Image (cartoon, rainbow, N blue to C red; front, side, top):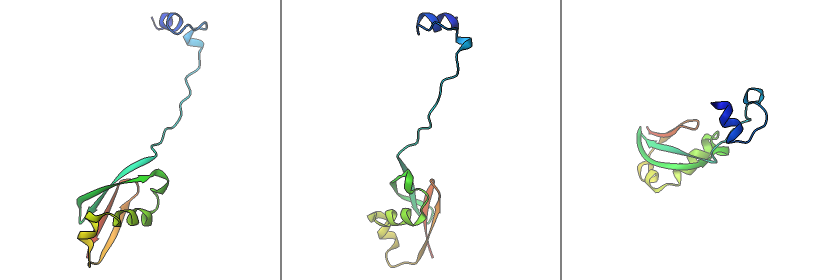
Amino acid sequence: MTEEIWREVFGEKQSIHLSSWPKTEIIEEEEVVIPIQVNGKLRVTIKVKTSNLKSQNEIEKLALKEEKIKKYLEGKKYRFIYVKGKVGNFVIN
């Protein structure tokens, strides 16, 4: 049945058994959504280009621009924990 479809529908002359496997390409998303938490609670999500996913400093800077994050960190000491490509978390001391 496969041979019949191969020849009749796709118009191929050579047998499907003699054909090579199709070539694939790796497709990567250009932007990824990273959830940002404060003390383990989700506060906002940010879109980040895949080229910037490795840089913890870049993710922290983008997160600090968000108003929802600023109000929780205002005047407080914190540290930023980032799991590459997954999540960012501000932990208030």
